[in-house]
Image 1: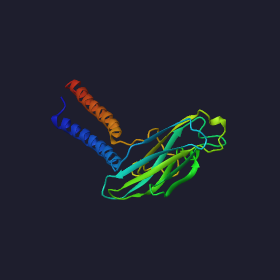
Image 2 (image 1 turned 180 degrees about the vertical axis):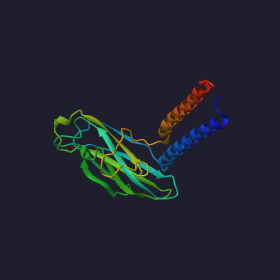
Image 3 (image 1 turned 135 degrees about the vertical axis):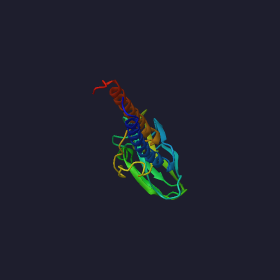
Image 4 (image 1 turned 90 degrees about the vertical axis):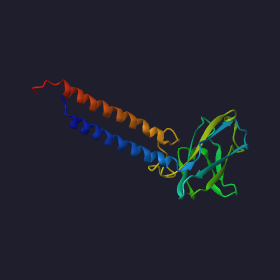
Length: 207
């Protein structure tokens, strides 16, 4: 028989490790709650030369201190974002201040654009425009594509450097994902602990 004191010690160790994992995941969850935003998805359907498509984006600071802000851009098109006259992107604030000058979309895909620091409780709005140049030839006829824009903070993604590719296949950042491996780790710790207890109980008394 294993002593009750040993059982209590084992349970205490498992609980301490589990608490540490939960606190680590909780810190990531807090970071993801700093801003209120949702990815903006844009479907581009066979634009004509010279035709533009506009949309609005917004983000709000949910905390009582400034946070660094950036915009991740991703997308895909087999034709529209390449060739001699590819689609171009501009982004301005509602008052017309340029954030991204007219640039080929292919040059910003996979990049994170640094934006002004977002003050406590403030909102930030952008107006995006994509345009197929007037001199685009027939190779773009009937082409389509999609773009995705997502506001992030450097606290959400500490390893992302503005103007460089963003890591990860998904732009959404949630603390819930971090709790999944925590639960798995906790279950393994508990299984190992109780397994040791059962093994000790089955040992002959003369050992």
